[in-house]
Length: 336
Ligand code: UDP
Ligand code: MG
Picture 1 (spheres, rainbow, N blue to C red):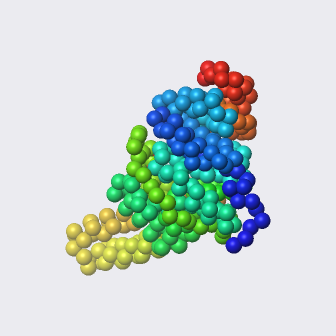
Picture 2: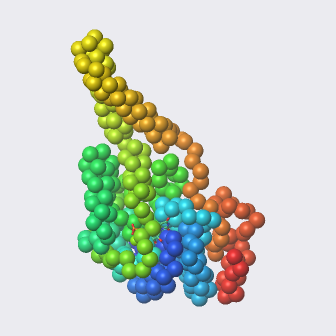
Picture 3: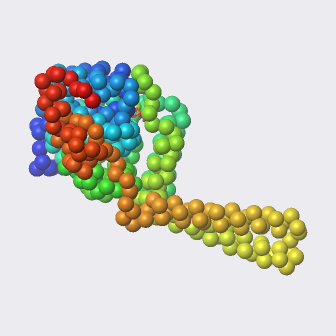
C-alpha cells in the first residue's frame, strides 16, 4: 500500500496519555516513553481526567523540566473516552500515539505500530497477544468482539485496543463528529479502509488500580450495539412482537376458559413482561439513537499549557494556555 502522507517516523508524534489518579505511574511512564521514543520529534500530551491524587502535580513538574510535555486538566472526571478525545483534539503533531499511563502497553512496542503505519495506513491498532488482565476482563472483551463483530456485524478492527497510532487529522475528524455514542474503534472503519492491527506485548498493572469498571464497559458496549447497528433493536423488536403474539393467544385461550386459573395468572405476567420489554427497548432506542440528540459536552478543561478553544473551557475567565503556560515554562510552578 502506498501513501503520499509522510509516516510517523519522519513527521513526528504526539503521545497522548490519559491519566485518572495515576500519581505513581506518571513519572515512570514518562521515562519509559522518552527513552523508547525520544529519537522522534515528540510531544507528550497528558490529559488529567479530574485526578484527585496529585497526578497533576507530577505533570506540572514534568512540564517545568521538559518543553515537550504539554497537558490539559479537566474540571472533573469525564471518563476515558473524553480524556483521549481531548488529547487527540489538541495534539500538535501529524500522528497521535495513544499510550495509557499505567505502562500496561510497553512503549517499546510502539515501534511495531510505527513500522506498520509507515506502510501507508491511517490507523494502526495494537492487539494484545498475551493479555495480562483478570479473566473476567478477558472474557468480557471476547464476548464484546463476538457480539459486536460476528452477531451484529459492526466493523471493528479485530482485537483492537486503545494502544494505537493514528493520523492526527483522522483522529480529530472523529472527535469533531461529536457522536452521541462515541466509539473510536468502530468509527475509524467508517472513515477509512486503511487501518490494520499488529500483535503487541502486554503487562499486568503494577501500580494503582484499573479505573475502568465492568459497569462502565458493559453500558458502553450496549451503547455501541444499539448505536452502530439496527440489528439488535430489530431482533429485540421481533422477539418482543413474537412474545406479545403468544401472550395475546394465551390470554384469548384463558378468556375462553381453555386454560386453568394458574395459567391465567402466568399469561398476565407474560403480557406484562412483554410490555415492559417493548417499552424499555423503545426508551433506550430513543435516548441513545435518537437522530442528532444533543448531549452534554464530553469534557471541560480547567487548566492547560496549550491553547484551548473557548467552547472547551468551563470558565472563560480562567485562561488555559495563557499566563499559566508562561509560569510553567519559567519553572515558577502553578498556584491552581
Ligand atoms: N483513565 C482516564 N479516565 C478514566 C479512567 C481511566 O483517563 O475515567 C485512564 C487511566 O488513567 C489509564 C487509561 O485511561 O491511563 C486506561 O485506564 P485503565 O488502565 O484503568 O483501564 P484498563 O487497562 O483496566 O482497561
Ligand atoms: Mg490499564
